[in-house]
Image 1 (tube, rainbow, N blue to C red):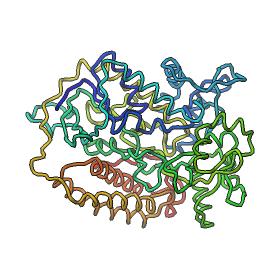
Image 2 (tube, rainbow, N blue to C red):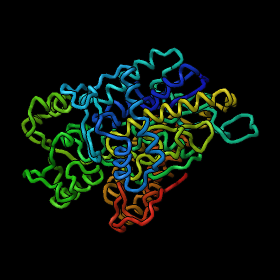
Image 3 (cartoon, rainbow, N blue to C red):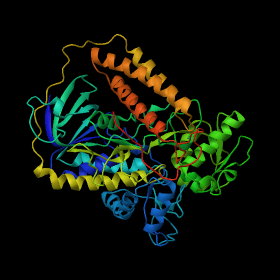
Image 4 (cartoon, one colour):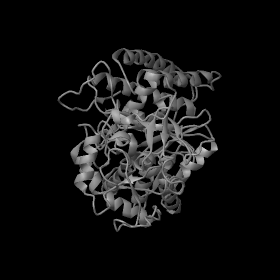
Length: 531
């Protein structure tokens, strides 16, 4: 059944839900989630949210740390915009009901415990033990479900935004979006959802890699959808690999928070030898790209499957108090972090590039917004600093929401779009092809476009992407869509954007390291690609 709302939000994490709550008092809103409302990346964020909250911290210090981590590619205006609005975003979460971990000693007068993570010069990461994302997600969900103007569409997936090529009666005027085609994962049918404004808040694309800390749904949907609609995509070569994902045959995507290193955990070889000081004077608190490359170097040098992360020298009560989730999860696999080290490996974690937007979340297509990890605001540059991600979601969610509310009365009603045409397709009896293509894509992206790259590896990836894209296009044209097919289609588009961006960057900077161009260029420039 086709439907119409004022604002259609695709994605239900911190960015999407915070925007929904901002807009709902003034408009009819629909929030789309591929799975349950809590299935996105937000609930997996362990560390916390960076903001200037203590007496000893300053906005200028947070800005400087972010610029340093971004390795010359941050937009200073975007960094200042987000950092200055950080304290207000935290106060809003507290007002909504998020119960951050208190500081029993209350050394800074704030009342909440602040931790320190890689790249930060002071303690400024406010958190809820080691499950901050889960706490934020729960509160935002609770508020969204109670809001009468918000309709929740779980188990739905966006195929594409509706533009002029989908409109029945062509009209003059500037190109804009009129809604989106949504696939109902339970019925298997595609419907038209008209909207004055569409917001892409779909998260990142780390599942394009074989090993990732992200949930299965992080398939770059919003980035691919925006690219197919003609929007510019920036800096996709910068995919952050989190240095410490739990290494265990039965553990799936479990992240070991950087906050452990902030509280004194050290990285060692299996024999107990510490190695980070020889790579960077900041040692374990160096930015993530430095730490991930150091681990990758040691693993390749010694033929290791993993390295070790050790916080067992800290008091056991302290560990179980501040890291209860990690402690319990590791115990499930027979690892007691109060008694010994944790085996860890790097894993694809965060997409620092994305859809180009301004500081109101507006894309190149009128009426189409993008916020959160799917977007490129200029905040992260060539490497995201720890715990700036949830901050960006909250700040841009509010900024985009304010812009939508202000403009909504002037946006024309969406034009009537053609229904999804399934008259010439059939059900597939070859779905194993999708599974094989998915596995092939993620493996060659890991091998050829991973932590360390070369021109030859990128060329090999480019060739395989071209072959996969043709296979998927043929399949897409002849068979009814499935969620696996749609995600594979998006992943191939994202892989193409990543590889072409990487080929354009003839230098090593931030998260992009290539042995063919080991040095940085004098001028730092963004890479911009389109489909």
